[in-house]
Length: 276
Image (cartoon, rainbow, N blue to C red; front, side):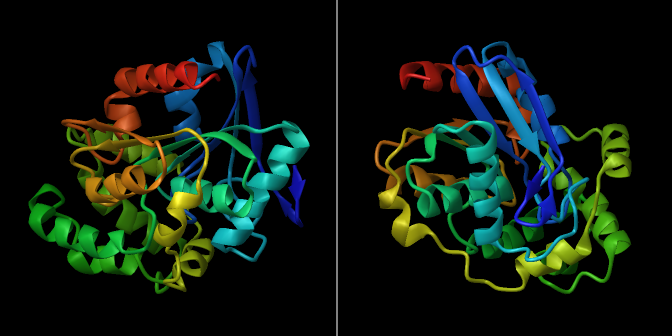
């Protein structure tokens, strides 16, 4: 789909018995829609699921500009073209940041907001650096410098970004499967140009505006999330009026994979209770 000069790779599945959910993947130039779609695929029995690679990610075109506002506007243009009514927006990690940005830039476009392992500002980065210092024994090929570089605009190229990601993978799961990680990292798309552009400015901070969000909101987080720590989800849940917090013990950043059944059940319960 052509959106504002970019060609976005879009997947559309399911049946809209109860409505439509747009899925936003995480990573800034890292990964694509596939992981989110696979995790939430069971919801397609009742919901239409639209998943896409954000501009500069996956199979979508490397079409600048790569900014939070532009990606949020891409979401809105895609929603208007494909759904034409308010719908559920479900964003994980960086996708959650875009979901929050979209909710504030385009009020009334999301009927419900579901946020997984995300943060309302760039301040989570400092906490993540402290976390890796305490957990470095879990990822013996990683270093604090790698995390600092991943939070910067100084990644050399796509290969370096892939290698950093591979080294950090043990931190993302409480039960780490190295063989699955190898296959996941082999198949994933990495775009250092997009990554660097989205980390160039440390101006992402929506905390002062969270009270403006006026739609039912569910915040999901793994209690051991290292990169978007639970403190960040608590801030969102406390500041967004009426928001619900679902904290999952013994789960990390990939809570939607590690505790998939529990996460899906809570999402269905939340949407049913709030009329979707």
